[in-house]
Image (cartoon, rainbow, N blue to C red; front, side, top):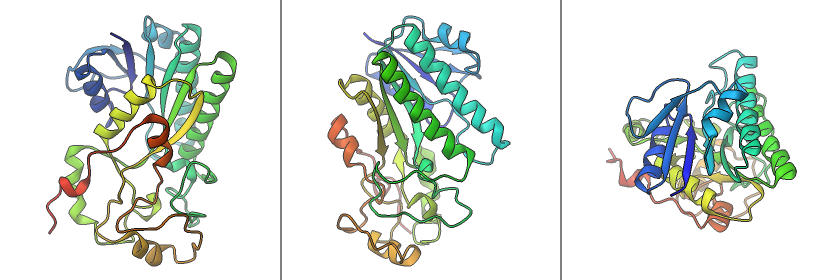
Length: 283
């Protein structure tokens, strides 16, 4: 049985990841600055801004899944968001390296491309947007995710640790499906995330695939559902909100995602299996 440490276990996504690994027979330690609402496994309260506490949290682990972060731009002063997100990922990977841990997953974000929180109306340069798309954030949150990915690259170069950075689309937990009827027919809503979404359970399975895979070095992967979160076809969404984007690199059939997940499918052997149309009764 492998021991996996999951940080950010009290957040939106964390409980789903903890539950997934526990149900799959892993020994799981959940780590967060606050206790989770549900006791799914053994929990350790730790401040990841303190490197020593990170060492303590990762003792005996085979892999770490680092989800802890301030999860959005502008909810805190800019320097607080940047410092928290950058220092915590550095400390976790430094501790993992010092303890000889060979596998890590970190939560990056589609926000790193810059469109999500842009106040200047940044548009995608092409769609579907893959991992080679320029990352051009104006905000401290998106920047912190780029720094996290570069930190992962550095640790891979130094130690050979495999670090998979998951650029997550909009995380949807089961209760959040209740919100879908309020936006699925309005193209102006959710345009900044290219109408992407990903079920938390599918993220959890991607995390497992990432720690079980070998030979990935340091790599960033988009994690998104196969479809958009809208009841409007993808070609029509682009015409309505991004008519000037002419570089269309794959057929926009039906409701095809505009945040490409093809690389994750290829490298991880992963695929999403939870879709909003199976969870939402259309009005």
